[in-house]
Image 1 (cartoon, rainbow, N blue to C red):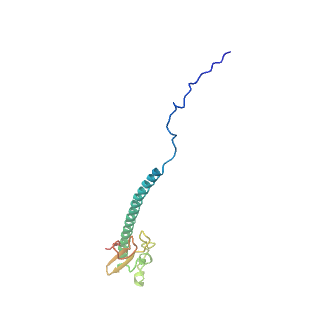
Image 2: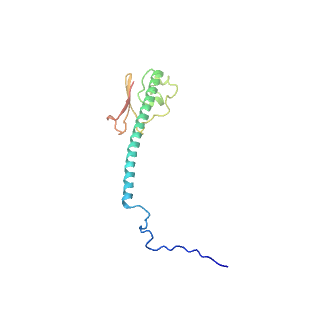
Image 3: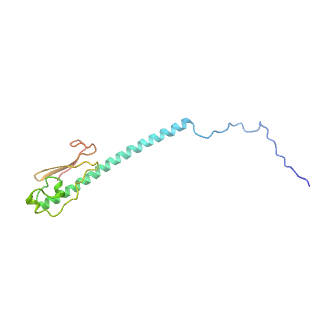
Length: 149
């Protein structure tokens, strides 16, 4: 029996590719470029999220103020006068004569604004004002949110 060997053509070293071996990984410049892009994108997202949250808090506080206004109007109809404080919406009037007309609480708890601060309520005669300190938490500043009849 005869065995045949297949001869492989020999490749001389001069015929091999002379390209340098390719390194895997990234250069420092590429990493810095990606990092810079991520920082810029993160800044844009952060600005948009914070602005959206502030706007949502203002909207929520405005809605809360409108609810309090309707609760005060309901108290005025029931009791024939303005409450002296927001607590009267929950506990009833402090005046003994008016207390006899009190049937049930209008609200179960006194709400706060979207930032967790209490509302300021001022009544004078038949008018009133409910005020939130707003974003900065300081009363009587430019960002206060108010409602009145």
